[in-house]
Image (tube, rainbow, N blue to C red; front, top):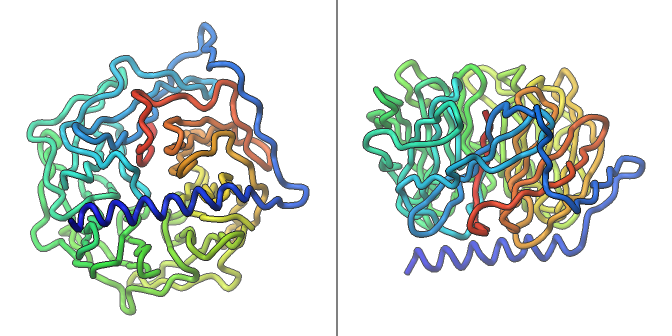
Length: 402
């Protein structure tokens, strides 16, 4: 019964986000970038080689699957042959209020996906052509209830288990021989009922882990020991700067600058907070933080590989905010761009291409994935975008790239 009740509560939250979307985006004078009309499918010209893949946890009820798309040099996407790939666990079919439900290891050889309804993590081999196949023993127990976010650094993995209304946790694992997921003894950090962890993330050098508690508006900060266990910072958890700290990411070029979206402050009050992660993993906000964008439901964030630009997806407004990042971490809002397809929860998780030229967004509410060019002060949606996910999936969670 608690499982069903939690699902209904979550559905109500997404419905509220969709209702805010109807209000529309709040413009930034001189900064809004119009989306390109889309009347054609992606046409992949001869010679437009496949340069990698984009993956989404389809979060399908019954047997879960991962949707895969080949990405091309012009930024366009086409379904990877054989997609979607069944991964063995069970998804919720209704979306996950989290960031990071699917991850790829640094060398691009393994993919990890949350199977939230079966309390498991699927680990898949990623083959040269982008296809997936399960490692022996997959899927593995998440060591908790309803895993919704995954963080990977080297062979260390942390999973946020949301708890489905009960106590949640963060639990650590090692990627063992053949990709097997092995729990780290004594690594579990318990969370109280109602914490609702929305994201767990490593910094670039693997010395810090941060988790966001969406339900209690707290941020957990940890040092990572040589044994892979977490040591909480003095004063952790820290109060967020606004209600509903949600998505988070450390700056790729500075492992001690942390960026956190604030999702639940209210209509038109979306923002991104910036923290310095100091000695002992203590978090302290920048003097000018948080940085407003005038939008609603600022939930998901990603940073370009060069560390110069942050993109925040505002689910309530159906927009993407683009910020420039100064050396000290201060943010300057460049634009708010309307996403063309708005329905249900609308746009959710974003990811940038390794060269920073393109942004891909999981449009979970419409069962699609969108592609944007990132040059200039705004973002512009490519012709043919968005591309449909297989089987009209509308509960997809997370997005990963290689």
